[in-house]
Length: 397
Image (cartoon, rainbow, N blue to C red; front, side, top):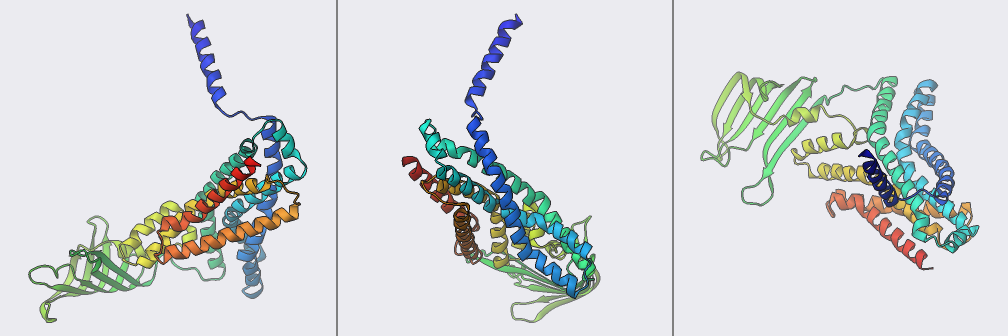
């Protein structure tokens, strides 16, 4: 009874296998040819980027500030993942362009097409390799690079005796804004200022509360206190040694209340802002989104837009590998006789154009001209369109 079932299972497996793309000898050959230029590109572009971005500065600190060579080397190694992520798209472009240009120059493309292989099928290994590099780039950018960058910054600060506490020590400002009732935009609800912070207690507090102005009394409240701490069990602020001033719309004090201890239901955001000292490059996407939520409560639109654009760029940069791989393959398969030096030169021009466009769209996104999504993805959409157009033209030739 089991024999017919095994036959049916085998048939299904065979059918499933027939639906999947098969890895042919040609695929393995193209993948092998792509690998070496890609590894060369990763080494070359990473070296250039890390030299400009970190190495020269470390050498200067060894010479001027007495930073030990061993520690400088460790910091250098910790800086590599960040620059390697930037090198992945450029290396993908260089590898695909050099490989397919050589195929074209050596007439191997003519031989492949003579065997009935389409341009799209010839380019497929490059696209698959680009997708694999995209996954690798995303993993490094999310898991390794933020942690290594933070560790490098910490080691350097300790070595230079410039280590700062993991919180903001003073001048903590929080402006809470909410949509206006008349729909005219956001309006200020509360202003919070603390002169000092020791990690648990804020001192020299001033809070101006406008949330009561819409009531019948039309009062606004000013709170001045020596200290304030956040009570995690009750989710509120506990103010000590302070005064509450109730101010009428005419500007006169309606009521003055002095207190030794007073609980106030205010947002926890000032504490979150004070405890957030990581730089943008030291945060992964989840941490950056969490910080964006905090920033959105402050009403600082410029900082919110800048961080929102940065989040989109964190998503987009890995996918640049796919676009660069497609563009490089599409340019490489065009009938031509170019050497490796020419391919390298064309790659540099394309890379410069992409990053220039990316810089422009990011600036437009941060200034509010376009949305953060468009700021991060428009260069990729343009590159993808150009790659598909070039590939279609090459297929018709």
